[in-house]
Length: 407
Image: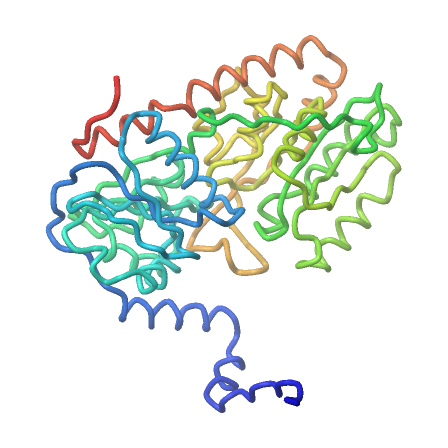
């Protein structure tokens, strides 16, 4: 009988590697893969025949959702598509000349290309669809420019940030292509407030965020402060914090839970749930509150608007592609240096927004006390999101390649 397998001892080189801090390890990894990864042909060949999409199709990530939705939009426009999942890189038979649209940010782009057959780039125009949450992109992203012929940012805000990377005289086009959420709007399950153990007859304010996306950037602390300023401990007002990945960041979660526990009208929901149930939770809310410091796009507010739920949000960054003062309650802010304790959302000289908490509290009070105003704002928000986040931006992007789209 064979005994249990013994753990493999780490080599001295591997042990030394693990002693390095996380950020230097990330930089060395990116530099190493950048040297090895294949480059596309220069100059870029003319696109033909459709678009092949490479992305995180099997992941529940923002870039994964973007890849899935853009594929649906292309199909709706009659554009032939082929898909490659970077986690399961099985190669379809992609005709010659079909351009590649790669939903992978620069730090991981070389590694993604190394996992694919080297021939995949040959004779093709390569487009990066990138996401970023600050007004300037990290200098380390410049290495990604050698792997693409053009770049589509997930918002105008992101596209402007990417342009800060380009050297003078660069011929790399950069355009904004917002995530086309409206082509497959959120479809809530049949769950009700009772299913979420939420009371009837109270005004529910929902703040939904993932701790993996940076607590300080998502700013749930600001949401708690604004809610408390507006309602103190009123039993007919309830703040629901839907928190993703609490176990991965226990210190952050413990501090949020402690702040929430100071009054009885703040509820935490940490369960992982299917998308339809998460949309049902959003539909149960009277107001969605996003006092973010910066958003590359703002998927949760966009989905709330498409559900007709009124949104209060910081009036800065990527969400302004589908919000204005008529379709959402935009909160004023001041710009401060961007400081992320985890070091993920940082770039030299970058700033982000510090939302005005008294103004947010006033907006909460006004909407909570006015059901008709909430309903009207929700309808205007839905109309705006449908207009801005549908097929039109995708159609324009495809047309810029010289490809045909359906009428």
